[in-house]
Image (cartoon, rainbow, N blue to C red; front, side):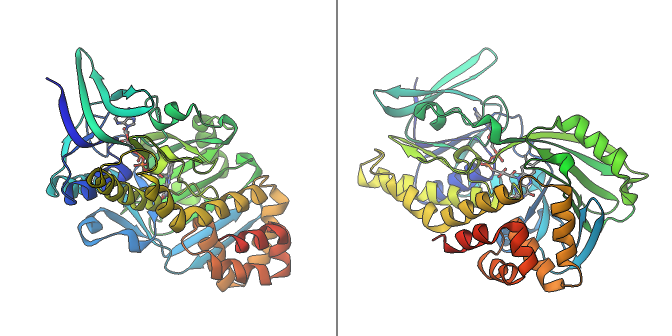
Length: 400
Ligand SMILES: Cc1cc2nc3c(=O)[nH]c(=O)nc-3n(C[C@H](O)[C@H](O)[C@H](O)COP(=O)(O)OP(=O)(O)OC[C@H]3O[C@@H](n4cnc5c(N)ncnc54)[C@H](O)[C@@H]3O)c2cc1C
C-alpha cells in the first residue's frame, strides 16, 4: 500500500527537525526520514552558535560558553574576552530537536534513506526510500529537502531537479577530533595561516571538562593529514597530553545559497540549500530558522491548494528577507581574506592588538552573529579596512 503524507521531510538535522516540528504543529500529517540509524549520529559534535538560538528545551545540549577566544596567526597571538555564544553538543542537540518535532505530532523514521524523488512531469509527488532489502514508496504533497551538505546521499533532491551540482572548487573539506585529557578546557582558539589557504582555518573549541574539539577545514587540503599535521606541528600547549577519541569528517559548501530554493512540490532548507555563512562555515542558525519557515510555508501552500513553485514562493521571499544579505556579506568577506597569507593575517592581528573592542568586532564579523555595527567599527580603522579591502567592507555594508 502506498503511504500518503502532507509533508515528507528528508533529513533529520536541524533544518529537517525544525521543519517537521512546525509543519506538524500547523496541523500537517508529517513524516521525517533520516538516513542514519540515530538522530544526531553523524553530526560533528561541537557547534558554535549565538546564545539566542538556544530555546529552553535545547539548553541541556550546551557544553561550553565561549567567553575567551585566542586568535592565532603565524607570528601573533591575541586573547579576547566577551560573550561570544555557546558550544552545543550536536549529538544531544539534534535529539532534543527530535523530541520537539515528535511532541508536535511528526512521525520520524531512522535508518530510512531517501534514494530518489517521485516526479510526475516537473512536479515532485513523493519519495522512494530504500535500505537493504526494504523499500517503500511514499507520496506527499510537499517534500522538504533537508539532507544537508555531507555524505553520499545529501543534497540529491532539489539539486537534482535543478541539475545543479556543488561547485567543487568551493567545497571545503573538514576533519575534527574530539580530544580527551585537555588541560585548558575553558578557552577557544582560532588559527589563520596560509597552511589552510585558500578558504580555510583551524580551531580548538572547549567541549566540557577535559574535552576539546580540534578541527581543520579548507578547500585544497587533505583533511585527515592536515588535522594530524596541525596538531603535531602547531604544538597547541593544551593538547600536548590529549588524545583523539572520535573523528568527524565533513564538508561545507561555501558557494552561497542556491539561486532557487524551491520547485514544484519541493523546498530545500539548511545545508542542502547552501544556507551557510562562508567566512566561518557556520550554518546551524540558518538551518533552524529556514527549516521553520519551510514547515510553515508548506502547510500554508497545502491549505491554499497550490504547491507549485509559485505557491511556495513565500519561502524564498521570507528566508531571503532575513538572511540573504548576511550570507552574501559572508561570501564577500571570505573572498577578501581567502588567500589567508601569513603576512596578511599577522598584519590583521597586529592591527587588532590592544584594541579589545575591535577584537570583539572581528569575532562578530567572523561568526556573522552581528554584522553591521562591528563592520562599521572595523571600517573606521585604516589598517584593518585596508587588510579586508575598503571596497569589500563598503560593498558589504551596502548589501540590503
Ligand atoms: C566541520 C564542520 C564544522 C561546523 N561548525 C559549525 C559551527 O561551529 N557553527 C554552526 O552554526 N555551523 C557549523 N557547521 C555547519 C552546520 O553543521 C550545518 O550548517 C548544519 O548542520 C546544517 O543543518 P542541516 O539540517 O541543513 O544539515 P545536517 O546537519 O547535515 O543534517 C542533514 C541530515 O540529513 C540526513 N540525510 C542526508 N541524506 C539523506 C537522505 N538521502 N535521506 C535521509 N536522510 C538524509 C543526514 O544523515 C543528516 O542527519 C559546521 C559544519 C562542519 C562540516
